[in-house]
Image (tube, rainbow, N blue to C red):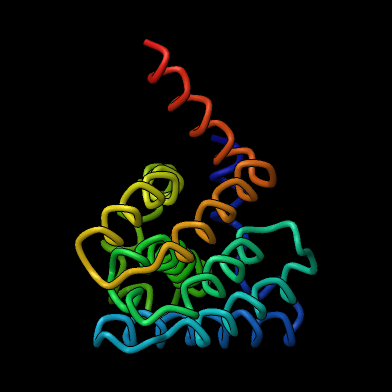
Length: 186
């Protein structure tokens, strides 16, 4: 509870101007990525730019932004990934990020999207947990896509390596892996 009160008192005004502008640019690029994916354009490179800006803003390579870059690089090589099935993990991360940005920015944008922002903020953990589970389940889904469509076994292999890397690097993904492992044993 204390953490949420601290987050409410934090605003973008506390940050240096360069960091504020970088954060704004990053979120506008995220929004552009979402629009491009909605119209079935291959938006991977736009997503990579947004993730690089997020890494620069956080001054760390040990973030979800690094995993996003790895994921987007994997799916950028294949034309068959130009649909929501493959872009959903990034879309979830970006929608949560945009809602956090709007919440911190406040102003008229916040007033317009207030219900959306509050809903996303209250269900943030659910969305991030779902993202990890979906990325894990995308490996067998990719195998099915190879069988029924024009997908590639290379995509399955690259995504498998991505999931293994994320299990090792990100604690939430490791917890999801362990819960799946327990369910399989039962």
